[in-house]
Image (cartoon, rainbow, N blue to C red; front, top):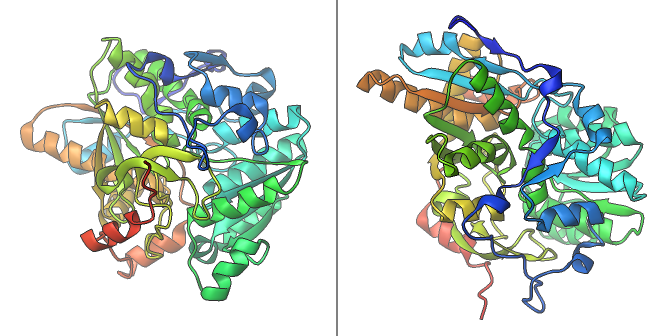
Length: 454
């Protein structure tokens, strides 16, 4: 292929048929989840009320590869393989010698990477006779994806959306309802926990931790229901590795390897989906990219949180997870316009970070939206607020290449389009979108809720 390409398209016959599990290649296994009562590692019976056994098995396996069922591949073929794009117009706008590639996941029916795991989770639940799934969502990408996936397999879907996003992004609710989901603003009057929060503060902005609590409580109370999580857990990250496996093949088609890989990180699934297959190659000595997590300065779990066992939800009904956390009681500022609002980072990605395999940086949202506008005006695609964090890091790297004259190859994941996030762009264009960087006192106060284990 000549060097004048813009889009690298992988033949459908090359679509990955296995997920990659990085646990099998790590020098040490990640710490296990703990039962909050006994502080012993949780077993399958502890998780069975929430997840089907197939997903529990994927959560704990150390097998390096897991076959993707045909019933999942059939739905993924609606949009996979997704394109790898070269951002030539952005390169020219930045006047950089760097090459900027992005793996574009906005081609999925829900407009993001989230259906890669939503389809798999809905498939396994349906195979075990589950008829109702509950979940949480922040900005709405995950709720939309699960609503779409449930429609493919004839499963009822119920979503608790963080109240601040529910108010900011009304068409996300509509999208979920089009696919048949029931949507609640969280905290909600539908659960005892939500009613308690609303009684204390009727205008509470909510948090992902609260929405998780409500969704789990509703699933646990219904024998026909199970719970789905859109990020954080090992099986979710594994399902997303189709992104990186495709990107590896696509970059090889144009004889390229990344010098720098950057991805936005909230719970960790988008970043891991792109990065873990490349980390496999790096650990095997076949390439040596710098691999960088990019998170919002308003929710900096990796860069300013602590690596400790903490609850995954606000009501403390989940197992204790060893992760980088700001504290399960952390409430992000409503002024933060993107997703990436979870108080903790994926335990597996946190472990990978502790092993020194990846770097992390936090970027304020105005710089992120500025990068999003640069990208949209050059490349034509309006990015969701989440990937603007990775774009901001890519722009920083490209400008450093301009300064040094070093022509690096940069790879990032454009994990979704921003067609339903235009309210945030409007706020940025009007100058009303504010930055918020947590003070030391705010971080300390949030971390007070983290349990102290003997």
